[in-house]
Image 1 (spheres, rainbow over the protein chains, first blue to last red):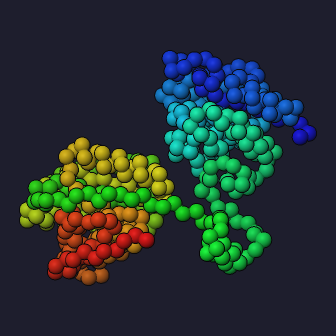
Image 2: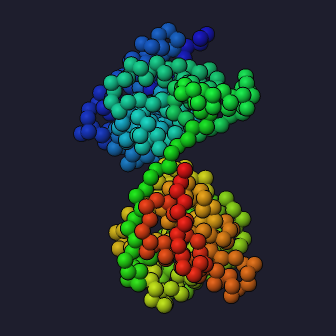
Length: 349
Length: 77
């Protein structure tokens, strides 16, 4: 490399040598030169570059005062004009992983390439894997020596303005990006070769990794429906008219709960659909198509079902990653269970 | 779960799936006219209520509008 790479490193209070959990409220501080894992990174970097500074921030401080912490961190590195930000590795430390992910995303937003590393199940991965470049690690620092060289190689590529190759080849966690590229062999030949290898019992490598759906144990049937409290959920983007809560039309970070007590039905005067994945007008005219309150009220009046739970849950389900959907679904289930709801009917558009 | 793309719901492991009408109007069909549309919606919700009272061992499709709903087994592949 012709010019020396200027690197700023981010660590938490533990890896920064400030202290353990008792020091987790430590605000952002900057030390010149490399500290903790940054020292090892400097050794690997050799004459190719220098760790100009190490930014240290306590896990609790970062997560409880995210905006302030991020503002302080970005302000701290500005003077050093870094070519690259390196954060972590965070291993399985959740707060640290989230901090590393947030720092990387903030760096990228300021036009500075960034790389971090953590365990694939770290919440930081869940939150930032689509944006940040994250090298997978084991749960503990035992593989620090294997992870840092990968971070360095990727960091150098990014700092040089290079494009990263496929996640598997480069050694980072896939961001769910697909890029157009030319393969040496046409698709039909690759498919047939793959099939031949599979039939021969040889190892083969799929180009479309399949994530097997989770098997969910079916809930027990309801013995007496006439006493059961039923909740209604819609993933069809049902919103109060005018979108007072400024809901998004896809990939939501949360769901919304609205009271329906005393409402015989949903009307197009009060509700509408806001969902980026289907034509919304029909459901906006008659929102009961995506949350059948009018129909269920009939069964309630007949005594076929017990009282309808007086709050509905809605979100626009489109473009939502599986992991996020699982989190939102579990949250809904917990909320309904705590409210004593026996069953729910979910309409998926 | 009521869904017009019920195959997807079954394949991804939803255990009680009710066949909805269309993606744009899952619980009814405006082309049927107000009365029949509402009756259709009632059948869909009735099938949902039936599913809640039915023991299932895995992803199972429930069809609305059948006089004696016998759930059709449709295991995810």
